[in-house]
Each structure stands twice: as C-alpha cells, then as structure tokens.
Image (cartoon, rainbow, N blue to C red; front, side, top):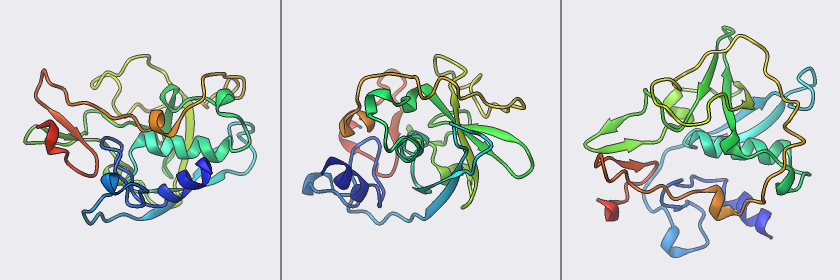
Length: 201
C-alpha cells in the first residue's frame, strides 16, 4: 500500500520543502498552483554491471536532484529492502552528456538561482537535462556540501559501484525521504522548490 501511494504521488510534482504534492491524499498538502512540468525518461547506468543495458527511469523535469536520485534508487533496487539500499544522500547524480563530458548535478551549487532572499533548489529543468539523457549514481566524493568546491565537478575516470549492493543503512520512510528544509535564518535566505512558503518569511 505504501509503495502504491508513493508511486501515485510521484506521478505529479512534489515540493521537496513543503511536502505539498499535485496528487496528495491530504487536502492540506495539495499543490493548488499551476506547475508546468514534463515527464522524462532517463537512462541510468546499471550499477551491477556497467556493460549491461541501461535502466530506464521515469522522472519529472521539475524534480530536485535528490528526488531524481531517490527515484533512480527505487528503480534499480526495487527488489532490495530499504535497509540494504544505498541512500540518496551518499550518492552523487552524474549526467553523462553526448559530448563525453560528465557533470555532477546537485540541489545547490554556484548556479543556484537567488531572487529577493529566495533561493530555489536546482531541478533537472534548471540544468536543462533533456529526455533520454544518460545518468549514473556515483559515490559522493565530498563529505560536506561546499558551494564553491562542489560545483559542476567533471570526471574522466570510470565510476566504481562495488560497494553499492553491500551498503547497509536504516530503512527510509516517505517522510524522511522528503526532508522539510528550514530557512537559513542567519543569512535571511529562504529555500523554495515549487511553492514559496511565506509562513517562514
């Protein structure tokens, strides 16, 4: 039942900050604004065997990078218990462009847009990732987020996946997988994804 509800909700936009969704079961958590989005199919490199066919994963171009990583993990490890899956927070999303360039996509980096004290989380649309793009989940290279050092890191070496299957962690609930991000009170900058939550203002 949990998986069925989750799948239904993920067919439409979900705000990663407020938890509001286009297909919410709760009236309080319903996105009422019109949000333009497209469904994309990304081809994800198979972590078990990089030479085997890529795995198609349906995502939305309005998804944050963390939401994309979670959908990819759900597709790759659908028959693996949550406790034995890698966590999205421990992985980087790498976009493998046709030119051969590799770019790490993140929720926040130096390209993140800030307008009038509102900082918007990066989405696939922000990076202009087209339908049919090839992506891979790779182990995080840095332990802490750093906006300057962590931006659009390019890699030439092949990615390693050996430890992905053997990783063990605690099971994730839907609530913990869509963290509610609080505003950065020190700088006065408020985060937003799809809907600006003026209650924090």
